[in-house]
Amino acid sequence: MPLQVSGEVLSVRRVGAYQLLTVIAPGIPELTRPGHFLAVQVGGPESSMLLRRAFAIYDVKDRGVYGGTVEFVFAVHGKGTAWLSSRRPQDRLDVVGPLGTPFRLPTTPVQAALVGGGYGSAPLLPLAGALRGRGCRVDIVLGAGSADRLFGQLDAKRTAASLVVTTDDGSTGQRGRVSDVLPEVLEKNRTDVVYACGPMPMLRAVAQQCAERGIPCQVAVEESMACGIGVCMTCVLPVLGSDGRTRMVRSCVEGPVFLAERVRWEDIGTVPADTVGAPVRP
Amino acid sequence: MTDLTTILAGVRFPNPVFTASGCAAAGRELDQFFDVTSLGAVVTKSIMLDARSGRATPRMAETPSGMLNSIGLQGPGIDAFLDHDLAWLAQRGARAVVSIAGSSVEDYARLASRLRGRPGLSMIEVNISCPNVEDRGQVFACDPRASSGVLSAVRKNTPAEIPVFAKLSPDVTDIVAIAAACVDAGADGLSLINTLLGMVIDTTTMRPALAGVTGGLSGPAIRPVAVRCVWQVHQAMPDVPLLGMGGIRTGSDALEFLLAGASAVSVGTTVFGDPTAPMRILGELTQELSDRGIARLRDVIGLAHRPAQPHVPEDPDPVGDVPAARRSS
Image 1 (cartoon, rainbow over the protein chains, first blue to last red):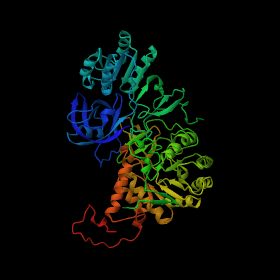
Image 2: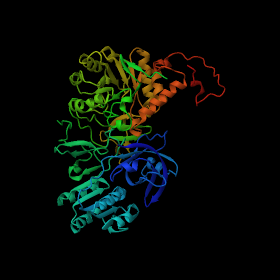
Image 3: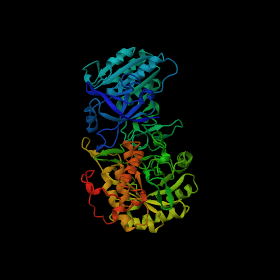
Image 4: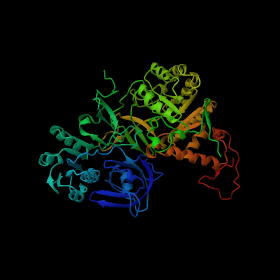
């Protein structure tokens, strides 16, 4: 059950190329599981920007001096995120959360590999903690364009049994993509399950590598949304149901976490002809 | 206590704040945020006979004080809707206004027949104006004869106690002519307005922002157009009940539609950014009425059409940005 909370900004900090915003949002931390997201109003009550911005929840604290706090990471891309980055402590921020379907956790201790691209690592770091809590071994792979676009390296180093870092420009870690190093990580650690979050092309590559090895994989996708709560129908993608039929499903409610093998990766951005209710083509 | 009751074609609603079709699904998601039975009514997303996938993504682009959508009437089809959605609304005790959409007169007639006798159904809204279909938005609602055919088919297949409203497009030369055609064909009232056909080009990719190229513009950006449509239709047909919608964000916006001639309003796009907005707007509207000393909502419907009373402020320091707008009753 999500809540709409008029929260108070506690801090906005620069972390490399990103911003880390902490908001006091009582009630939300207790309900949050790794993979949940937050929909944040931008621009203030009179803003010409009507739509919420959706961000994966990074860290939550359900008690402490400030009551419950929620943290999320974002990059300044447009006017909405620029406004967010200019928030100051004690500013009001209207947030709705926790939203979506979170990561499913294994019931027995397994070997898990977590793959994050850019600030897609944000929901994976609390997930790593939850997996460790269940006795799982956690290996982490983080990738980004450059060193300043990696998020959570220190966290990851602390939580994970092993950490491999890649950057496109080689500014830190191995030069290349996460998919260049993932096969070796999977083999070396005899990985049982993979969790991934990041840009869609990265998720597609990770999904394919897992499928080739028969390793179950959960992905948290990123689709543009207007509402985040399941009423606008803009954030859909083609996903196979348990009945084997493809439907255009909402990534805000049925997702953002999907089983990778259910997502029709090659058809994202289209309505495949065999989708339930697809237009009949002449 | 302000009496918020409103009557649309003989059906009584406890208050005039409804959701808008396509902006509230079938109420279940919003019920997590507020009790949907406290709405005047839930207006459900337009349902078609068969399941429909809708259009490819991107389906949405934010615009100044608005957004474009290009969903393409995605939905589960009437059977699943009746079993899962309308049944849930009825069991929940909510009043449902069911929006229907079809590609032929026959489709609309069959949809109306399927709704016959269903618990929870308060009213039917006939969507003849969704712009997200082929044919450059050349929908039924662009042509008086086509509109008339659909409305007369739905009216014929609907029991007399269920009002049938036609939802019209503002993208026409003379909305009053279309409105008159619908009413002559048996429509009990009109929903004004659907989205305006619009387009955004992404200057980074240098291509249309939406996969469907064009989409429907909604939000406060279209409010003056919507108020104008309500005004024109009410002026021409003061006895025809109107459900007004288009960019309502506050109680004051809702009041503007009532003053123009709407008997009730739908809150649409605002819900995307503010899921509890319908309840906030209802509270604000109640306050706006009581601030003006108005005891009954129905006394403001169409009030703006009456000649202004000369107003001398008794109060040397009038409240608000526009002092002359304050009237004692």
